[in-house]
Image (cartoon, rainbow, N blue to C red; front, top):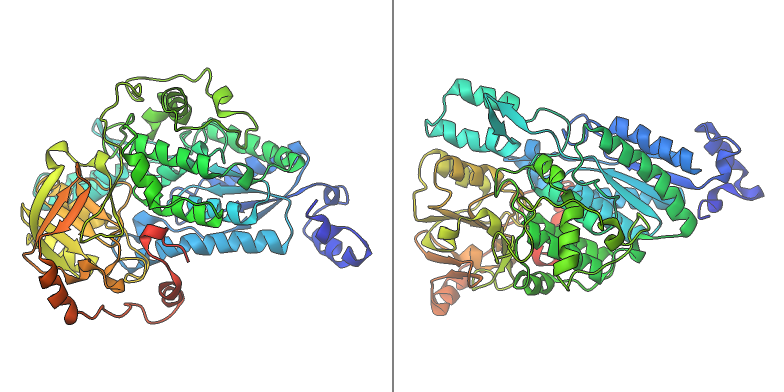
Amino acid sequence: MRSDNVKKGLARTPHRSLLMATGVSKEGLKKPFIGIASSFSDLVPGHIGMRDLERQIEKGIHSGGGQSFIFGVPAVCDGIAMGHDGMRYSLPSRDLIADCIETVANAHQLDGLVLLSNCDKITPAMLIAAARLNIPTIIVTAGPMLDGESKCEKLTMISGSFEAVGKYREGVIDENRLLELEEASCPSAGSCQGLYTANTMACLTEVLGMSLPWCATSAAVSSHKRRIAFESGVQIVELVRQDKKPLDIISKDTLRNAIIADLAMGGSTNSFLHILAVANAANIDITLKDFEELSHEIHQIVKLDPSSSITMSGFYQAGGINAVLKTLLRDVPLFKDFIGVSLRSTSELVKEAYVDKNVIHPYSEPFTTKPGLGILYGNIAPEGSVIKISAVDESCYEFVGKAKVFDSEEEAMSALENDLIKAGDVIVIRYEGPKGGPGMREMLAPTSLLVGKGLGTKAALITDGRFSGGTRGICVGHICPEAANGGVIGLIKDGDEIEIDINKRILNLHVSDNELEERRKNYIPKDCKVKSGYLTKYAKIVQDASHGAIV
């Protein structure tokens, strides 16, 4: 066992003494050492229930014959961090968390890991750490929260709070109703209810085979989730015994499986960043070209909130990820069978899976032959940009508008709040990329306000920043190169005409090459907005979004 490096031999007498100080018995010293990396936090709704799941995982590890050790890692709630400087820390926290897990696991020579996660950057961080460490690992995602409800109106965090702000500003609802929605939108522990980034990454972790079946969709407060946590604890000991490692599971084929499932379900645009980063950590050749290639092949067979009214609870009842895997294995030759942490083949796991065809359509009868996500190129984004096609009304697949340019999210929000954005406008938010932000903030507040004000199909938004998985409307993000790296987005002026064509996968600025060259002569990218601390280090070493914003 790897842990023999800290517990066997005469020279390790001090180490054993220190381990006994933690409560490990002499018998416990003979067992595999299993770390539980827990992102429990009282600050994050998706994580507040993890103390109970930690206990279930511990029970499972000890039942399976292992010795467990819990250690903590940071967690950021994107919803609470949204719309202010706190959001700059969200994406950078991904790499910080991966570093924390790598540090603790290697410093103490753990034999295996159970990674307890839930929200937006924590789950991909744990996948990155798993790939880097390549010791037996299983991921437990803590699950979605229950749906909100008020006066028989079904609510999610997005519809009941962010979009409700726009409705209130437009006079659609009064202050009393706004307060009712605020109180009822998030009724329990768990990740936000739709197929936003947290649940997208949980689903893709299950697709990758790095968590047990049903883990992604079983509710945070359910007994099913507690049982999965226990079973994960038992299973990690078996993975250690069989020396089944993450890089035996995470491969080019399984990462492409994740991309296929993502496109078929219409997940969060942030998944592009995270899959690229996991591929980098695993030293696997996956690039934006894989997303582009597959996006022309894959149909969308699932539509969940924010693209429909069906939330994660409805998806769970409809058969969850097992149902999606069964459909893709049967009908998409590009989707490969494999063996994950369950130590059973995917085809075996899903053989008897229930599929509600009203929610998970047969591949021959998709919601649309368009994928849920797409890559747009053009003179604004020669290295690519991302759009959530599933969240765009088909009447808006071809959109041409006039630019309204802002050098920060705050400036754009001010314009929206003061009714300076009209139908036919294209909001351009720049200097919000990985380097320019720094930290690549999510633009959920302005996109939600657009929808709440009734402009979701009448105006567009493009940015070198990124979006929440809950974003809907004509919203293009991850524009590369970003403004801070001299990208064309930094040369756009108010009134310039911008074309967004989803059918042709185009994002173009209708300005001549000669005019752009003239503008470039006088263009000096703005300095980093943050002058000290973690983010200044991050800005110096982070790569662009087309490479997963890796450091």
